[in-house]
Length: 159
Image (spheres, rainbow, N blue to C red):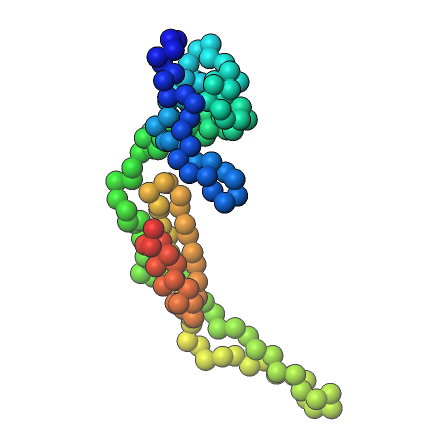
């Protein structure tokens, strides 16, 4: 590297905050990070020339490497073909027996009797959804949980 490659050094401070932190010229900072990532570059030597702390410069280099890895990872991720998840409903839900209720009596009376609720079976709801990332969500609820099923469908569609 020649001295003309380092014409941006030392880094130009564009702002000094009330807490004493410096804000540097973004273009000069980018060039300094690129220079540090070249083979054989001395990070400590470049930090001295740039008038910045070597630990701070090392942090900038690490952050830039993370940003590049994240950008590569985002580019490699397949975009789902659809933003909607397939929802399958079952027309026939299995009929459930009405729950048995036992009413306790006073001790001197006749033995306790078992009463049944009206014979109208509670209907069951089943929700099965396959998300674009391959996750399968299955939810079974009784007829009294219609609000839960509605909330689940709304949550799946809210992405």
